[in-house]
Image (cartoon, helix red, strand yellow):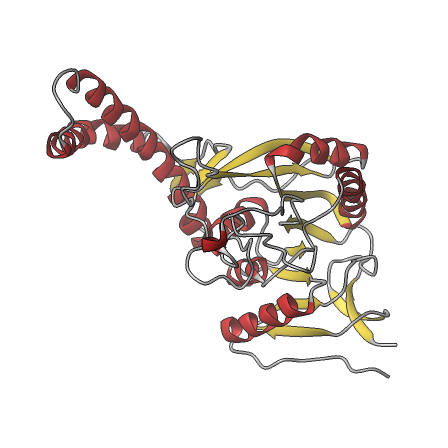
Length: 351
Protein backbone atom coordinates (compact mmCIF):
# COMPACT_ATOMS: atom_id res chain seq x y z
CA UNK A 1 0.00 0.00 0.00
CA UNK A 2 1.27 3.45 -0.82
CA UNK A 3 1.34 6.14 1.81
CA UNK A 4 -0.32 9.21 0.43
CA UNK A 5 -0.93 12.60 1.99
CA UNK A 6 -4.45 13.50 2.96
CA UNK A 7 -5.97 16.49 4.70
CA UNK A 8 -6.71 16.24 8.40
CA UNK A 9 -9.48 18.03 10.29
CA UNK A 10 -7.47 21.24 10.42
CA UNK A 11 -6.87 21.25 6.69
CA UNK A 12 -3.17 20.41 7.03
CA UNK A 13 -1.59 17.84 4.72
CA UNK A 14 -0.28 14.77 6.47
CA UNK A 15 0.61 11.19 5.64
CA UNK A 16 -2.10 8.56 5.74
CA UNK A 17 -2.19 5.04 4.28
CA UNK A 18 -4.40 5.10 1.19
CA UNK A 19 -4.33 2.77 -1.78
CA UNK A 20 -4.26 4.38 -5.22
CA UNK A 21 -2.19 5.00 -8.30
CA UNK A 22 1.07 6.90 -8.65
CA UNK A 23 1.15 10.40 -7.22
CA UNK A 24 3.62 13.19 -6.61
CA UNK A 25 4.05 16.09 -4.19
CA UNK A 26 5.39 19.58 -4.69
CA UNK A 27 6.19 21.85 -1.79
CA UNK A 28 7.40 25.41 -2.16
CA UNK A 29 7.88 28.10 0.51
CA UNK A 30 5.18 26.63 2.72
CA UNK A 31 2.65 26.47 -0.14
CA UNK A 32 1.78 22.81 -0.69
CA UNK A 33 0.72 21.16 -3.91
CA UNK A 34 -0.28 17.51 -3.82
CA UNK A 35 -1.21 15.77 -7.05
CA UNK A 36 -2.99 12.44 -7.23
CA UNK A 37 -3.21 10.28 -10.33
CA UNK A 38 -6.51 8.59 -9.43
CA UNK A 39 -10.21 8.86 -10.21
CA UNK A 40 -11.65 9.85 -6.82
CA UNK A 41 -10.93 11.78 -3.65
CA UNK A 42 -12.66 9.56 -1.11
CA UNK A 43 -9.41 9.49 0.90
CA UNK A 44 -9.77 13.19 1.78
CA UNK A 45 -11.27 13.69 5.21
CA UNK A 46 -14.62 15.38 5.73
CA UNK A 47 -14.84 19.14 6.16
CA UNK A 48 -11.23 19.96 5.30
CA UNK A 49 -11.44 21.93 2.03
CA UNK A 50 -11.91 25.70 1.88
CA UNK A 51 -12.62 25.98 -1.86
CA UNK A 52 -13.55 23.48 -4.56
CA UNK A 53 -12.55 25.03 -7.87
CA UNK A 54 -12.86 22.64 -10.77
CA UNK A 55 -13.61 22.15 -14.46
CA UNK A 56 -15.16 18.67 -14.71
CA UNK A 57 -16.20 16.95 -17.94
CA UNK A 58 -19.01 18.78 -19.77
CA UNK A 59 -20.36 15.78 -21.70
CA UNK A 60 -20.31 17.77 -24.95
CA UNK A 61 -17.69 15.87 -26.96
CA UNK A 62 -19.19 14.75 -30.25
CA UNK A 63 -18.16 14.03 -33.79
CA UNK A 64 -17.88 17.22 -35.87
CA UNK A 65 -16.36 18.24 -39.18
CA UNK A 66 -14.09 20.88 -37.62
CA UNK A 67 -10.87 19.00 -38.36
CA UNK A 68 -8.86 22.23 -38.64
CA UNK A 69 -9.17 22.70 -34.86
CA UNK A 70 -8.27 19.14 -33.93
CA UNK A 71 -6.49 18.78 -30.61
CA UNK A 72 -6.51 22.49 -29.80
CA UNK A 73 -10.08 23.44 -28.87
CA UNK A 74 -13.40 21.94 -27.84
CA UNK A 75 -14.56 22.68 -31.40
CA UNK A 76 -12.17 20.00 -32.66
CA UNK A 77 -13.21 16.61 -33.95
CA UNK A 78 -14.13 14.42 -30.94
CA UNK A 79 -11.81 16.31 -28.60
CA UNK A 80 -11.65 13.51 -26.02
CA UNK A 81 -10.48 11.25 -28.85
CA UNK A 82 -10.41 7.56 -27.98
CA UNK A 83 -10.30 8.13 -24.19
CA UNK A 84 -13.97 9.01 -23.75
CA UNK A 85 -13.51 11.24 -20.71
CA UNK A 86 -16.18 13.66 -21.96
CA UNK A 87 -18.59 11.18 -23.55
CA UNK A 88 -21.47 9.77 -21.48
CA UNK A 89 -25.13 9.08 -21.90
CA UNK A 90 -27.27 11.87 -20.46
CA UNK A 91 -28.54 9.68 -17.62
CA UNK A 92 -25.06 8.48 -16.70
CA UNK A 93 -23.71 12.02 -16.73
CA UNK A 94 -26.51 13.33 -14.52
CA UNK A 95 -25.76 10.51 -12.09
CA UNK A 96 -22.11 11.59 -12.09
CA UNK A 97 -23.10 15.20 -11.34
CA UNK A 98 -25.00 13.97 -8.29
CA UNK A 99 -22.06 11.86 -7.12
CA UNK A 100 -19.62 14.73 -7.57
CA UNK A 101 -21.88 17.16 -5.73
CA UNK A 102 -22.21 14.75 -2.81
CA UNK A 103 -18.42 14.48 -2.52
CA UNK A 104 -18.01 18.26 -2.77
CA UNK A 105 -20.38 18.61 0.18
CA UNK A 106 -18.51 15.98 2.17
CA UNK A 107 -15.03 17.50 1.87
CA UNK A 108 -15.98 21.19 2.13
CA UNK A 109 -15.83 22.79 5.55
CA UNK A 110 -18.82 24.77 6.78
CA UNK A 111 -18.57 28.12 5.03
CA UNK A 112 -16.42 26.65 2.27
CA UNK A 113 -17.12 27.73 -1.31
CA UNK A 114 -17.33 26.00 -4.66
CA UNK A 115 -16.98 27.18 -8.25
CA UNK A 116 -17.74 24.50 -10.81
CA UNK A 117 -17.51 25.00 -14.59
CA UNK A 118 -20.43 23.61 -16.57
CA UNK A 119 -21.85 23.47 -20.09
CA UNK A 120 -24.99 25.54 -20.64
CA UNK A 121 -27.11 22.45 -21.37
CA UNK A 122 -26.32 20.98 -17.94
CA UNK A 123 -26.52 24.05 -15.68
CA UNK A 124 -29.90 23.14 -14.23
CA UNK A 125 -28.81 19.53 -13.63
CA UNK A 126 -25.69 20.68 -11.78
CA UNK A 127 -27.62 23.29 -9.82
CA UNK A 128 -30.15 20.72 -8.59
CA UNK A 129 -27.42 18.16 -7.86
CA UNK A 130 -25.63 20.67 -5.64
CA UNK A 131 -28.87 21.57 -3.86
CA UNK A 132 -29.79 17.92 -3.34
CA UNK A 133 -26.35 17.34 -1.83
CA UNK A 134 -26.98 20.04 0.78
CA UNK A 135 -24.99 22.83 -0.84
CA UNK A 136 -26.26 26.33 -1.64
CA UNK A 137 -25.70 27.47 -5.25
CA UNK A 138 -25.79 31.27 -5.29
CA UNK A 139 -24.91 32.47 -8.76
CA UNK A 140 -24.20 31.21 -12.24
CA UNK A 141 -21.30 33.24 -13.60
CA UNK A 142 -20.99 33.79 -17.33
CA UNK A 143 -17.42 33.77 -18.63
CA UNK A 144 -17.26 35.71 -21.89
CA UNK A 145 -14.39 34.84 -24.25
CA UNK A 146 -13.60 37.68 -26.73
CA UNK A 147 -11.21 35.43 -28.67
CA UNK A 148 -13.69 32.60 -29.21
CA UNK A 149 -13.22 30.61 -32.40
CA UNK A 150 -15.71 31.97 -35.02
CA UNK A 151 -17.19 28.60 -35.90
CA UNK A 152 -20.24 28.96 -38.22
CA UNK A 153 -20.23 32.70 -37.48
CA UNK A 154 -22.25 33.52 -40.64
CA UNK A 155 -25.22 31.35 -39.66
CA UNK A 156 -25.33 31.42 -35.85
CA UNK A 157 -23.99 33.15 -32.76
CA UNK A 158 -20.50 32.12 -31.71
CA UNK A 159 -19.99 29.83 -28.75
CA UNK A 160 -18.20 32.55 -26.81
CA UNK A 161 -19.33 31.88 -23.23
CA UNK A 162 -18.87 29.26 -20.57
CA UNK A 163 -20.58 29.04 -17.20
CA UNK A 164 -19.49 28.61 -13.59
CA UNK A 165 -21.93 27.63 -10.83
CA UNK A 166 -20.80 29.19 -7.55
CA UNK A 167 -22.01 28.79 -4.00
CA UNK A 168 -21.29 27.77 -0.43
CA UNK A 169 -21.71 25.01 2.12
CA UNK A 170 -23.81 26.64 4.80
CA UNK A 171 -23.14 30.35 5.18
CA UNK A 172 -20.45 32.94 5.95
CA UNK A 173 -18.34 32.16 2.91
CA UNK A 174 -15.21 34.12 2.03
CA UNK A 175 -16.09 36.77 -0.56
CA UNK A 176 -13.42 39.40 -1.08
CA UNK A 177 -15.47 42.12 -2.74
CA UNK A 178 -13.89 44.93 -0.68
CA UNK A 179 -10.23 45.65 -1.40
CA UNK A 180 -8.21 47.79 1.02
CA UNK A 181 -4.73 47.37 -0.41
CA UNK A 182 -3.40 45.03 2.27
CA UNK A 183 -3.39 42.07 -0.14
CA UNK A 184 -1.54 42.77 -3.38
CA UNK A 185 -3.17 39.75 -5.01
CA UNK A 186 -6.64 41.17 -4.40
CA UNK A 187 -5.55 44.38 -6.08
CA UNK A 188 -4.06 42.50 -9.01
CA UNK A 189 -6.90 40.04 -9.63
CA UNK A 190 -10.08 41.54 -8.11
CA UNK A 191 -9.67 45.32 -8.07
CA UNK A 192 -8.32 45.35 -11.63
CA UNK A 193 -11.30 43.35 -12.90
CA UNK A 194 -13.92 45.41 -11.09
CA UNK A 195 -12.50 48.74 -12.25
CA UNK A 196 -12.05 47.48 -15.82
CA UNK A 197 -15.62 46.15 -15.81
CA UNK A 198 -16.97 49.54 -14.77
CA UNK A 199 -14.90 51.36 -17.38
CA UNK A 200 -15.80 48.86 -20.09
CA UNK A 201 -19.54 49.19 -19.52
CA UNK A 202 -19.38 52.99 -19.71
CA UNK A 203 -17.24 52.99 -22.85
CA UNK A 204 -19.41 50.37 -24.55
CA UNK A 205 -22.57 52.37 -23.92
CA UNK A 206 -20.98 55.62 -25.12
CA UNK A 207 -19.60 54.06 -28.32
CA UNK A 208 -22.82 52.27 -29.17
CA UNK A 209 -24.89 55.41 -28.61
CA UNK A 210 -22.55 57.51 -30.75
CA UNK A 211 -22.53 54.97 -33.58
CA UNK A 212 -26.30 54.64 -33.56
CA UNK A 213 -26.73 58.40 -33.86
CA UNK A 214 -24.04 58.93 -36.51
CA UNK A 215 -24.33 55.93 -38.82
CA UNK A 216 -27.70 56.84 -40.27
CA UNK A 217 -26.85 57.43 -43.90
CA UNK A 218 -24.32 56.44 -46.53
CA UNK A 219 -22.28 53.33 -47.22
CA UNK A 220 -19.99 51.57 -44.78
CA UNK A 221 -16.71 53.43 -44.25
CA UNK A 222 -14.32 51.88 -41.72
CA UNK A 223 -12.36 55.13 -41.36
CA UNK A 224 -15.48 57.05 -40.38
CA UNK A 225 -16.46 54.33 -37.92
CA UNK A 226 -13.02 54.47 -36.32
CA UNK A 227 -13.22 58.26 -35.99
CA UNK A 228 -16.65 58.06 -34.35
CA UNK A 229 -15.36 55.48 -31.87
CA UNK A 230 -12.33 57.62 -31.01
CA UNK A 231 -14.54 60.67 -30.53
CA UNK A 232 -16.90 58.78 -28.24
CA UNK A 233 -14.04 57.46 -26.09
CA UNK A 234 -12.49 60.94 -25.77
CA UNK A 235 -15.82 62.52 -24.83
CA UNK A 236 -16.56 60.00 -22.09
CA UNK A 237 -13.22 60.29 -20.26
CA UNK A 238 -14.40 62.81 -17.61
CA UNK A 239 -17.34 60.52 -16.82
CA UNK A 240 -14.97 57.56 -16.51
CA UNK A 241 -12.86 59.42 -13.96
CA UNK A 242 -15.90 60.42 -11.93
CA UNK A 243 -17.44 56.95 -11.90
CA UNK A 244 -14.21 55.16 -11.00
CA UNK A 245 -13.57 57.48 -8.06
CA UNK A 246 -17.07 56.72 -6.76
CA UNK A 247 -16.12 53.05 -6.41
CA UNK A 248 -13.88 53.91 -3.46
CA UNK A 249 -14.57 55.17 0.04
CA UNK A 250 -12.18 56.59 2.61
CA UNK A 251 -11.95 55.53 6.22
CA UNK A 252 -9.66 56.97 8.86
CA UNK A 253 -6.70 54.96 7.63
CA UNK A 254 -6.95 54.19 3.91
CA UNK A 255 -8.98 54.03 0.74
CA UNK A 256 -11.18 50.97 0.21
CA UNK A 257 -12.69 49.70 -3.02
CA UNK A 258 -16.31 48.72 -2.34
CA UNK A 259 -16.70 46.22 -5.12
CA UNK A 260 -19.96 45.34 -6.81
CA UNK A 261 -18.94 42.01 -8.31
CA UNK A 262 -20.75 41.15 -11.56
CA UNK A 263 -21.72 37.61 -12.51
CA UNK A 264 -20.26 38.24 -15.95
CA UNK A 265 -16.48 38.18 -16.42
CA UNK A 266 -14.37 38.66 -19.54
CA UNK A 267 -11.14 36.75 -20.08
CA UNK A 268 -9.55 35.46 -23.25
CA UNK A 269 -9.59 31.70 -23.47
CA UNK A 270 -6.32 29.84 -23.40
CA UNK A 271 -4.57 30.48 -26.71
CA UNK A 272 -1.78 28.73 -28.55
CA UNK A 273 -0.74 25.17 -27.82
CA UNK A 274 -2.74 23.76 -24.93
CA UNK A 275 -1.63 21.04 -22.55
CA UNK A 276 -5.30 20.00 -22.33
CA UNK A 277 -8.07 20.57 -24.92
CA UNK A 278 -10.35 22.32 -22.39
CA UNK A 279 -7.58 24.12 -20.45
CA UNK A 280 -8.77 27.22 -18.60
CA UNK A 281 -6.71 30.43 -18.43
CA UNK A 282 -4.75 30.91 -15.22
CA UNK A 283 -5.90 34.56 -15.13
CA UNK A 284 -9.55 33.51 -14.73
CA UNK A 285 -8.74 30.86 -12.14
CA UNK A 286 -6.57 33.33 -10.21
CA UNK A 287 -9.49 35.77 -10.08
CA UNK A 288 -11.77 33.07 -8.63
CA UNK A 289 -9.16 31.93 -6.11
CA UNK A 290 -8.52 35.50 -4.95
CA UNK A 291 -12.24 36.29 -4.70
CA UNK A 292 -13.34 33.13 -2.90
CA UNK A 293 -10.48 32.21 -0.55
CA UNK A 294 -7.81 33.59 1.75
CA UNK A 295 -4.02 33.12 1.74
CA UNK A 296 -3.23 29.71 3.17
CA UNK A 297 -6.61 28.25 2.24
CA UNK A 298 -6.80 24.67 0.98
CA UNK A 299 -8.13 24.42 -2.58
CA UNK A 300 -9.33 21.19 -4.22
CA UNK A 301 -9.46 20.57 -7.97
CA UNK A 302 -10.69 16.99 -8.50
CA UNK A 303 -10.55 17.31 -12.32
CA UNK A 304 -7.21 19.05 -12.60
CA UNK A 305 -6.25 18.27 -16.18
CA UNK A 306 -2.90 19.92 -16.85
CA UNK A 307 -2.64 21.77 -13.52
CA UNK A 308 -3.96 25.28 -14.25
CA UNK A 309 -5.77 25.52 -10.90
CA UNK A 310 -2.64 24.43 -9.06
CA UNK A 311 -0.63 27.18 -10.74
CA UNK A 312 -3.25 29.79 -9.87
CA UNK A 313 -3.60 28.65 -6.26
CA UNK A 314 0.10 28.42 -5.45
CA UNK A 315 0.73 31.71 -7.23
CA UNK A 316 -1.65 33.32 -4.74
CA UNK A 317 -0.27 31.64 -1.61
CA UNK A 318 -2.89 28.91 -1.28
CA UNK A 319 -2.38 25.18 -0.81
CA UNK A 320 -3.94 22.84 -3.34
CA UNK A 321 -4.90 19.22 -3.79
CA UNK A 322 -5.31 18.09 -7.40
CA UNK A 323 -6.85 14.89 -8.73
CA UNK A 324 -6.42 13.71 -12.32
CA UNK A 325 -7.37 10.24 -13.57
CA UNK A 326 -5.68 10.48 -16.97
CA UNK A 327 -1.99 9.63 -16.62
CA UNK A 328 -0.91 11.66 -19.66
CA UNK A 329 -2.58 14.84 -18.38
CA UNK A 330 -1.35 14.13 -14.86
CA UNK A 331 2.24 13.94 -16.06
CA UNK A 332 1.86 17.17 -18.02
CA UNK A 333 0.52 18.87 -14.91
CA UNK A 334 3.40 17.61 -12.77
CA UNK A 335 5.95 18.86 -15.29
CA UNK A 336 4.16 22.20 -15.44
CA UNK A 337 4.34 22.64 -11.68
CA UNK A 338 8.00 21.64 -11.62
CA UNK A 339 8.66 24.48 -14.04
CA UNK A 340 6.39 26.91 -12.15
CA UNK A 341 7.74 26.25 -8.66
CA UNK A 342 11.33 25.44 -9.58
CA UNK A 343 11.13 22.56 -7.12
CA UNK A 344 12.22 18.95 -7.58
CA UNK A 345 9.61 16.30 -7.01
CA UNK A 346 8.98 14.58 -3.70
CA UNK A 347 7.26 11.18 -3.65
CA UNK A 348 5.97 8.68 -1.14
CA UNK A 349 7.12 5.20 -2.11
CA UNK A 350 5.38 1.90 -1.49
CA UNK A 351 6.12 0.35 1.86
